[in-house]
Image (cartoon, rainbow, N blue to C red; front, side):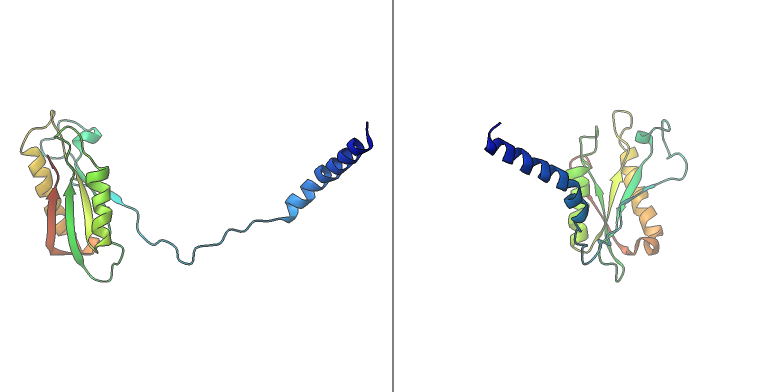
Length: 161
């Protein structure tokens, strides 16, 4: 082995022997954010404690509900908007016609609720309307709990919603 090869082998041995000691000495501390996010997580609530009127079963598709997106600044009661996502009565477009809209309303200082209503072909007209009407009554009756004004509840729908 040449003199150069011996030197490289010695240096490599020293570096590999020292690595565990170096690794133990260096502790990486991540900076903590100055302020924690105090935004509450969305909360899903059934519109009826028991089976909904006209329910054809006990599956998730038979249980209408609302998902509450509380606004970020809760200094005084606010307006609320119930969002009914579209989907042609076959599915609910809950991301771009639900969650994203709720986040936008929150940014405007508005409390948002996403309505999960019953869908066809299993359910027909009047059931969906009944779910929407129940959501307005339900939210209005719990206005204080939701931090909203009972006289400022709106409903916005997309496509079939």
